Length: 423
Ligand code: AMP
Image 1 (cartoon, rainbow, N blue to C red):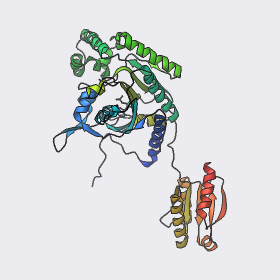
Image 2: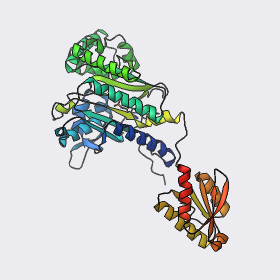
Image 3: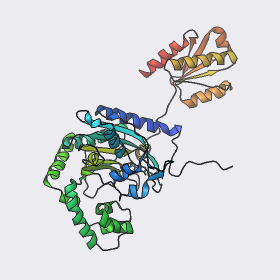
Image 4: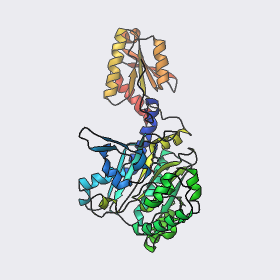
């Protein structure tokens, strides 16, 4: 019979890889919480309308990539393609804006986009997402990028670049839209059908097009950053100034518009040249106005998301997976010894030490091979003779020494040894 396979573009994360994920999540939580972010967990499915209203009807995500379906009540549901819209919905629904001051949230979890799978691009992928509500000044823009940079540094990523741009406010955008549309009309009709349509509906989205012909046609297009008003310009200059004072390296990229409609003013992306065409590790920006558009108060906001698969692909280029090593392995021969070893291992675990045992009663040689393979620092060896003498052998696999330990309070002795080792 043919075995069932996972859905295309959706990956299992197997135990020999999961160390990467745990490590990245641990560092992310540590850094985010230091900056005052609190974890939020929203459902994976949301009403389809939430994404159409926030990300934008004419974006690639909403037009082509959503996992959308009608449930048994015929309500339209979508698996979240990104986290910001869900966090904003929760923020409004639970009136989190009623709490005074700034609110910072983070979320870690799977997102879904029906894209063509390739290395670094999947249909289920994972993001670390951070969102801040309630600050419209430039300080927070700089802080969030500084934090992103610190996180990447702490997790051990090298060779990435922070690109920043300003999309101006909605007013700037309105004026620029006309300029861009005129340019696109003058560039002729060789655009792909999507871009021809977007020229009229949402010309900015032509920048997201992946068709080479279209990219060539917009090469000489006017840059949005040259059309932003004085206030938006001052905001952007202040963000840059803070980044420089913080020592966070960046480059201004006037071509970067990000593929979502809700962004205003500061946008940013972390890119690499080490992952082929899937070069964006993470990105984000300001979305003042979105909270109001989705039925909440007029609250400024900014956020970003990091793609965990791409981040881990990068980390894997330089290192082995972080291994999970039990400090103690118990090998035993004979019924009485096996029973003693089994009880000892359970006690070690109860007292906080990771310990492993061979349950199958194999030869001592086979057990020692397993102990070696497990990477354990200490191996407990127990046979009939040891039991009769009320002892066990404790072998230190690193120092290559072995000593006799009384069975009485053996767990305590081993914990002392393992404890010294850790300290
Ligand atoms: P976006 O909001 O689209 O810029 O996504 C933020 C980050 O999520 C990107 O920079 C990628 O690292 C990651 N990402 C987006 N889409 C995918 C995908 N289909 N597969 C893997 N990672 C993705």
